[in-house]
Image 1 (cartoon, rainbow, N blue to C red):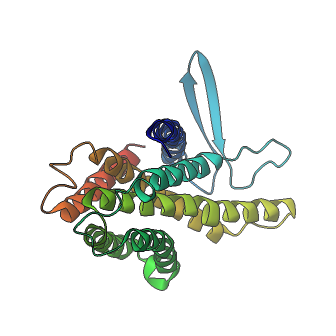
Image 2 (cartoon, rainbow, N blue to C red):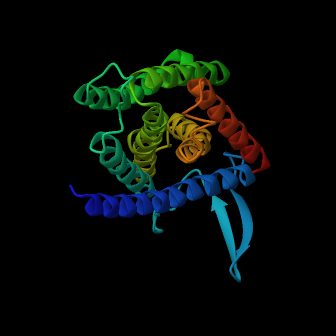
Image 3 (spheres, rainbow, N blue to C red):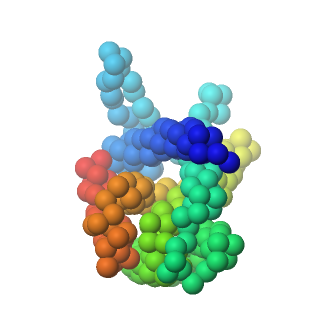
Length: 264
């Protein structure tokens, strides 16, 4: 692939990735704000809003009115992940910057390790939060952070330091997209199916879906921090303690997410 073609693909994929991510993160935080305003799950609630000269009333229900058109929010996550994966493959797998002279892996081994971490990251994360340990939110958050820190350390040993940061961001982005498509959407479909059959919806499904959505709000801001960190190599991936700084970026992003959630 010649340089001009590669740069054109880079530009198109990057634009698509950023645009889709804005839509995804924006609607995620909009619903986070709504949940803060409509916090009682046992009662109908309403909130009034004004935007662009129009007034809007949003009502929360535990049983949907299935005679109305139901709007789903799912393709933002899929497009963000697909465009990001394509960009990662273009720049790091084919671009030759996944590994460097200090890496113990060959190019092929590096690609295999990268893909393995993406898949394995989801398997470990999902199994952990389904397990009894995952029912304890504080302990679960602490263990998840330590696992993330371990991933950051391992990535800096396997890949080039620049690629290591993006590898961790790619793992987190994969967790977020998989949460939407493999946990949140299936739960929502089961809740809707129960309502159509006149059955009482299983509130546990709603709680699990909401829990994964909450995880996404905490991962979203750190992922954005990781993506822009590549513009500051001295203070991030080029630093002696790059993996600890990566852990610090996650804590800063998670703290920002917690602050925004409380303001909801």
